[in-house]
Length: 274
Image (cartoon, rainbow, N blue to C red; front, top):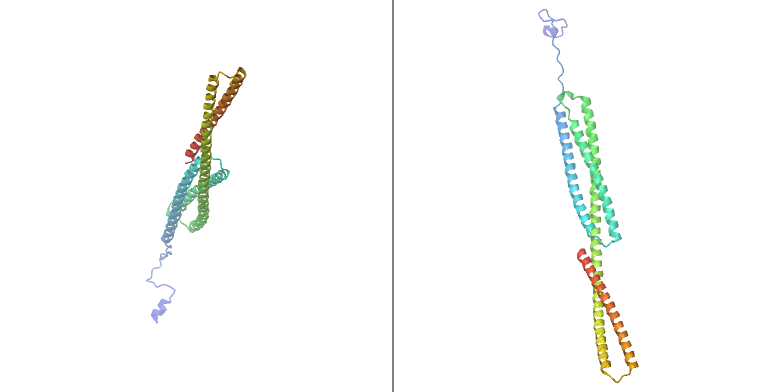
């Protein structure tokens, strides 16, 4: 009974010390889980930034390859085909848009890197509830920005696929155009060869006529029984025939020169297109 009374006694005993007892402060909560979460989130954001950078480099390589292909296609175009030129113009416009999107992606990557390093406090003394809340808000904002960049990246990949399809169609159209042009040149070359054979036959016929005229002149000179009028008429006819033959020969030589020049031009075009 005395023990329970002493336990409920409010007034201290005489022997009991009346000095102020030390107050026990509440132990502050540990913050290392928060730091661990921050480090993990920072690592994820850094990995995302690195992934975006590598993806940007890959896209730049693909764009460079497509630019080289387009340059080669443009160098081989010399027929002035309107449809192919419009396709090249469209490809160049898409390439310009793609480079603009690449620049925007690079700026977004730089901003993400700066914001990532800005998320980490300089020292543990700066950690507080408000700082943690602000950091969480910034992380949410970064996640939203990352989602937006993913959407832009998907749109960029779609644009690249469209560009590749357009480039494939342009290459196919170019190949068809070259094939058609080769066929036309082959037909023209065949026609020119036939014309040359015809002209050679005409040249041989003209040479035969010239030989006949020479024989007629020799016979006229040997024949002394012809009178002066007949001899004058024969001389006039022979001169007219020689002039006609010379004009035909000149025209034939001119046609031959034109045909040879056309053949050389077509051969040069064929070699260039091949």
